[in-house]
Image (cartoon, rainbow, N blue to C red):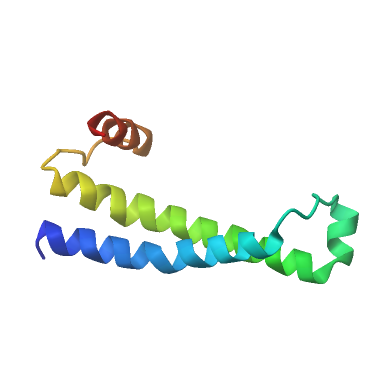
Length: 95
């Protein structure tokens, strides 16, 4: 698999989680934050919050495990021994 394929696959894997997280957050709208007691009573809000958190976690995993390494590989950067924070700082530095 060449670097272009890895980058395309990483983007493909991240898109659904990103779309679903944005869609769920849009349904949340400007509703005020709830305390835990209120949240436990509002089952719809609880499901929506769970959906947002789950999709955000999936997106974070797709970015960290696939997209960031594929991007660095595409840019011919050696990154294998770097922690994630250094990878992100380096990508930011590269623009």
